[in-house]
Length: 382
Image 1 (tube, one colour):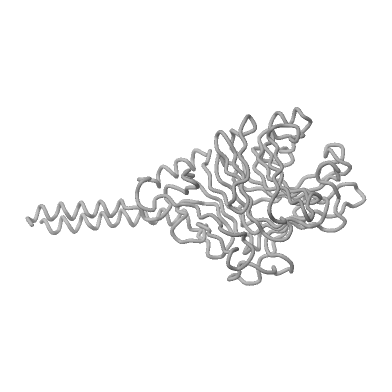
Image 2 (cartoon, one colour):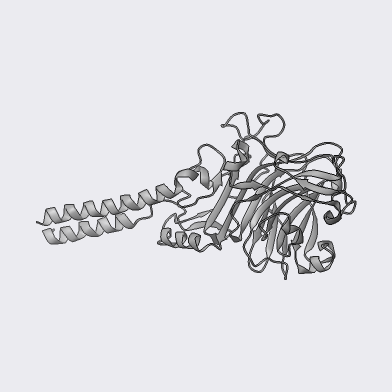
């Protein structure tokens, strides 16, 4: 091969090598063929400090008159506690404080002030605009609470109480018995506000019977939010699709909550002793409304059709209830799958803290490889 031709060949190889994707999933994550640019994953089975998880506990009080029930509600940080597994290598079993491991969201019996202590928390990120969201939850067996996994476009509680854009999966422990284990699927909308904050009188409310008892073990609850509909799932099995004006159009964030106001038509209660809802993980794959995040995606996604540029989100095949099935997949616990992703939490093996620096380092390495190759070519040709 002539020297000049050989030099051009080597230079071309260097350029191709330098532009090759350095990490998997740089262009995002797919669910049933739909691409999402961002993720937020939290492994509550291995978290000791809630403040390091990407979530914030909610603190507020709603007096009885505003709570639409016989009792008021008092959300506080002490009603949300972490209870990680005793061993970082386990994925099921008792926590370090006893009982089910995971995040505990607690409703207690009311004191003399007429308000019921409750727990609630929401994600730090409020830029979630369409996506697939799932949580593994064990509901309480104590009668008299409402446990909820939901999305809302209001950021500061308790403003969402008057929300007209909300996606809910709600569980009323008073509805659980030997023959009935329902989940209430709700799209809060202007119609529900006009009906006195009663979505049950609208077409965006459905009760779906589950083939298992939600209070006997962890199960995954999920909703996929699109521009024109919301699809609901339990343990990967499709439940219901909802359409209409109740489908949200604005960005927001995820919430976990358990509460009671003593309303016999909804939450019932209050419970006679602590009612504990336990969460083992929450995962979200979504598009961001934040222009900086959108720019980050454009910078890192150079070729969406490149091998491994997108990654399919694995679906569970069994309820996450033992060491085999509870060890579900986290992109954020891999070492090459969350480039430039800045929100994840849980297992000590997570690479969250290094996401930005790794991305920058890969760019630097790529440039260094190209420059070194150029120097080699020039020296050879001269």
